[in-house]
Amino acid sequence: MPADPSLLGVFAHPDDESLAAGGVLARHAASGARTAVVTATWTEGTHRAPELAEALRILGAGTPRLLGYADARVPESAPGQKRWCDAPLDEAVGRLVAHIREFHPDIVVTHDAYGGLSGHPDHVQTHRVTVLAVRAAGLHGLHPEAGPPWQPRALYLATHPHSVAAALRATIGTRKTLHSVPDDQVTAAVDVSAWLEQKVAAVLTHRSEVERGALPGLIAGLSPEQQGQLLAKEWYVRHDLAPVSVPPAATRSELTA
Image (cartoon, rainbow, N blue to C red; front, side, top):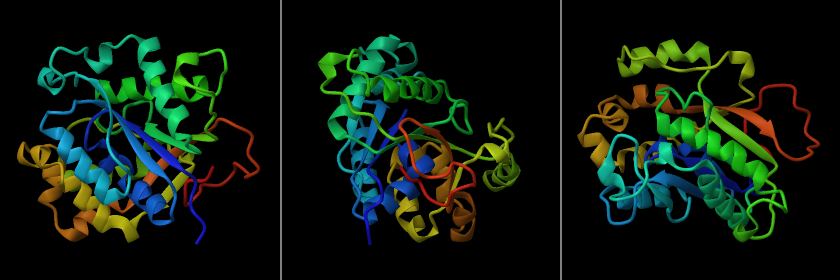
């Protein structure tokens, strides 16, 4: 089976990679593609770093690439460091450009403009930085200290269509606002049911989030059927970054470069 395109995920916190794109990461790794994840917040030596390492091992996504900024709401995530949402834009973009140029991904995956369902400010910051970094990575004159230019072919934004938001609300039992996009903006709807067991295992590896009752904890309390309803499909909005020969028209069932 030919390998899928190489894929670099860029996410705000440990567990975002598993929740937002765990199925796609596992699918690409299973095909023989190179996969990796950059995580903006938390640092080595904190309790969430080994949880992230184990989740990436399960998904086949290599070892953690931590930018080392602080979570907006958890100062102890990176003692003495800037909050990610306060990081100077040029600094943050340059650090991510270095990872893109070193890894050479065909595809980059990150949060959508809302910051996903939750709208967390760190997710929104990650979206903004990644959108700028995937363009800057291909330009000779920007961030020369980060290495030779490399242009990914596509950026995919992990999202949810309006049509499934209500069902998700019922499944997880929340009254919070869930941010979603019009169905016709979704360009890839990926069935990851074949990798659901890996995805759920990666989510639950974030034990500290399970224990404090965050989304991984809610997922831990669901039946296997409910876990499948929540996690067996992933949705993305594609942004082309380089010329492609694939017609852009219909909704895709996989992520292509």
